[in-house]
Length: 172
Image 1 (cartoon, one colour):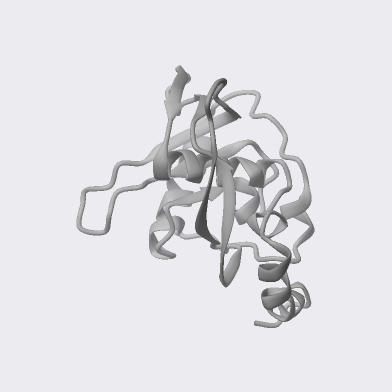
Image 2 (tube, rainbow, N blue to C red):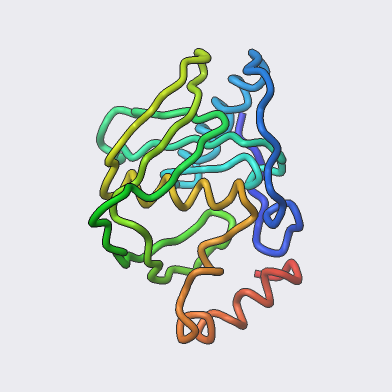
């Protein structure tokens, strides 16, 4: 079942999400519905606040359209930059909750990610790089009430300000 995607201006996108206390069949089904929603919207990641749920749940699938789906379900994920030489890398980002806006965001190139999967297993991934590192950081920002447009340059913000104001008022 596809779910409606919450867009810029909705207060839930600015709330810090609550931890998931227990992974239930209903929450696993919600994650499956989030994946279906993400695929239909041509996204690569989706966080629970983007579908109106204030919980620490993210889904990611970086498989290209012609490839078989390879989804990851992350309950209570945490991400932090890896220690050591870890330059910031700038790349263009977009967001299903902030449609039609793309801008460069600088993020650490290497991250450490921990989460619990849908089977209740604790996963610890070190030295993640590339698109997966960027997507994980973007989606986990959502769980902390942060949007990618909060991290763009002043010039990009000025370019997109009118679109953001229209979205915040419910007009696209």
